[in-house]
Length: 484
Image 1 (cartoon, one colour):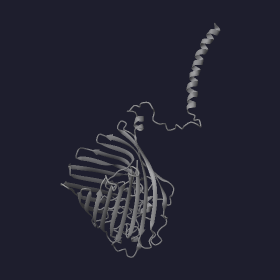
Image 2 (tube, rainbow, N blue to C red; image 1 turned 90 degrees about the horizontal axis):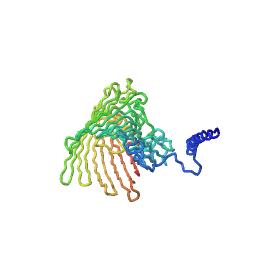
Image 3 (spheres, rainbow, N blue to C red; image 1 turned 90 degrees about the vertical axis):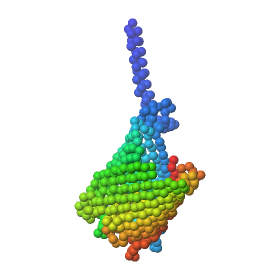
């Protein structure tokens, strides 16, 4: 009997002991990779059906996009002034989840290399100036860098509304004054909270609070004021070098805008940019178009007003961004005819002599009708700009877009520091822009060739520092983009 009793006690013990071994030793085997095994650190899609309302499903059914880019830039200056060239190549990936209870997560990054350039860190022996366009093609803060340069470009959480969205984190936005400005290897990114909401059929709101910016031609993210002055800081109104870098504070940038479309052929936009302690800028634009049998006629008007806030950045006016009490006024007009695939426009912009129009060049390009790629009129007052543009757009042709523009820009004298921040003379500019789709070679492949010719008109007082990389030059850009 004793042996029989012991037998019945041993059997359950052996059973439980076997189960314990199974749940301890077997997982240990599962966590060990033999050298002949395939790595499974990143597991693929499971074969079983997933719950379409789960977070896993949102990630597994997300979208992925890629971008490879090659950019060649060459600047030929007049006479003995230095010439420059640079070749850059890079690529990036972007991932965005599917919607999960109205939320989406996105992340993207980009890397690029200098694969051949002139000595961009060496100053011109005559003027002491550095390269302007080519140094900006790479890392403007470290022109000697020939290793890989990379940047976390987007990292955000988006909440989808019924007719809009709210985004928190690193992102890309396009507004009149803060925009991608895609003229180098990578554009400008911003960090903060951004709302885009269609309020009704006629009204749309965009705006938010930005705390950090990663300007084009850089690889880092900078808090507010740290992102200003990474490019040339120019001169104070009295002619002394600007000394605002490290001497101003900017906790955030507040932006608000409304777009109103009372009619299908009429649109009005109002934007306000508030930089506490520095300045406020308000921008307005009206567009109206009329359709006839064979053509479309569009007319537009722009208006922008700026004024300094408090001391403009610093009580010491030699260290401020905008002089105390400074103001500027800008307005412009456009008339454009669209006939078949051709667009012809006449454009005018005026910056009055009341003061210099100022806005950090690191954050975006000018919004004016007279804007021409590779130059801008930020930093100037008392400007008259006239630009004629002709453009052909044909998405079905290999020549997706081709255009020619010619502009006359009358600026203040280079020594009128109160109205000419960067010592830029008046000039003529001609651009030839050719964009081609190369689907025959590879679907998703596009190319661009841009020629820019600038001829100086103003008095430079025989000082080449007012010419190098500014006027009397030829700039050539060749760009290849592959999107997948």
